Length: 201
Image 1: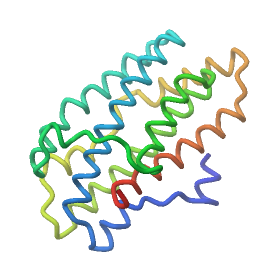
Image 2: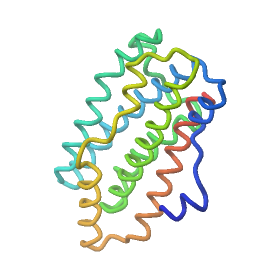
Image 3: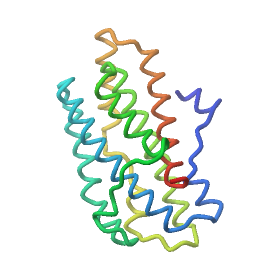
């Protein structure tokens, strides 16, 4: 996946919009709506994954998702979104790409494939979010500190290592590592489309 990132990098349209000086509060509101739809899919997917694979990593993953979900209403309120406005039905292919792919992964992929999809998601999401946080702080738009702080955070300590150990367990049991890393690349592309959806709607 690292080699593919270098050869065929996946853009972050939200970051590009921040850096171009064309970001609006409507973009920020859509990003928070995306987050709510994403964490809803994550809670569903991690719960399904826990039932399918019976691995303790899903406790930490669900804790991460529920924590995000509990913070989003407060962040939404800072930019004029009430609870009813914060969640909206995915209405474009880009908006639907990440939650749909994650749920499909939970339902149908092998242990290693699902694990590498989760790892790619966490790695690319937090990398992109941290870059967005820095760009928001440097932007002329007055984005509330609750939002810039949220996007500046790192993944929970030890979570990536636990997900990779879960992947290795699947490979040790016979899962195809080549296929797993192809799934990881597809997840990275879904995360790229996630950022695009906040800009394009």
